[in-house]
Length: 479
Image (tube, rainbow, N blue to C red; front, side, top):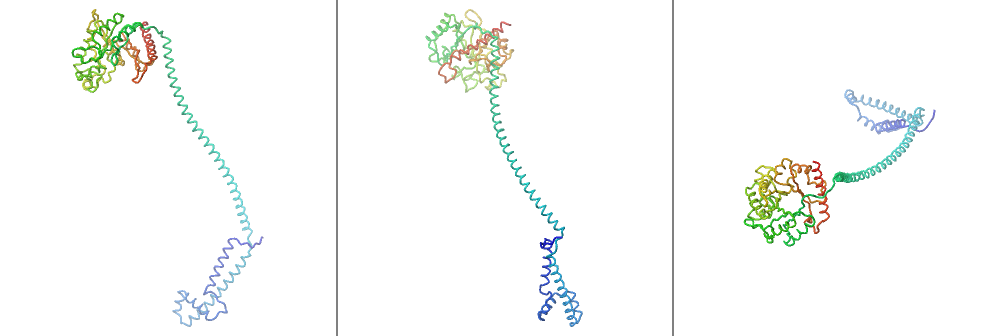
């Protein structure tokens, strides 16, 4: 058994309690020394008398005064003895507790607690190391994730760039496929010289040449294989009577017209006059005398197809041209780019479709030309630009095929896959019309701001048209 002077917590607590009890006993009113004076004893009695219980007071009321005083003295003496005994016992206990042997069990418990404390310290150290390792591991993972994110962002940008490149390559591939298909078609087409009539279009509006220069041009063109002239007069024709107002100040005279026709005849060239009868009628509709015929009061391009005065007036206009072109077998009636067709109030009210309005206006003029005769009594035939017919079906086209022929026009360098030629257009045209004209581009700077004529483009346009005419010729021969 081990003796130790160290106090554990429980022993310390007992000592504190005993000290408190001792302090309470030593308070005024506690046990007094036997050497205390009577006066002091008297004060103690007085202090004690103030602390009398209710039972003592009631007893005093029942006893005589001398008996009460005797009882008080006896009680006080007994209480003082009890207090002294209690104090002595407490002091003895305190002395014992100061050097009391600690039970082996408590020492063992303290050792166990110390051992657990040490183990906890070791675990704490181990946990700190583990936590440190975990933190370092997490930092490494975070660094790895950051690198992965950066790589992912870089890869995402690379993917977007790659997608763009793929789209560009895909577009180029589609173009190459189309070109390849076109090449396959061309390889099966033997391009042959054009065997039809070759005309030169003289558009005289804007900057017409002087008559002597025009005659020189006509003779020069014959040397290059030109078979005829398509002359678009507009305000350069010597109009007379009600249409005299249409003449420009430098219009050709009747003698000039006769010189043109005689020169063409000498060169064995035909002449086809072109008179606009639907769209591009600015030279007529710009005058107030004919403004009431406009499809739109503010626009001078197109004539109203519903107005009852339109067709009769155009017939009179054609009469003057036909009169001075007695040998012309064909009359070109224009009919292209009627942008505001079916927009006037009367046309909308009629409920007619665009094709019906077109027929309603031009079919009487087709018939009128067909009924006229040349000087040698040959029936005439009209020609029209084709762009307003390109979406028509075969049956609609057949309604006019006995009166007129389309002149298909396109001026771009490459006509392969030309977007303004709808699908199956050529098949429909060849089924409906026994005769088809084409219009290439041989002059013009193409843009309002152009200063130089793009000769290469015009040449490529002609070569492209040769492929189409060769294709049509081969299909015709196979049929």
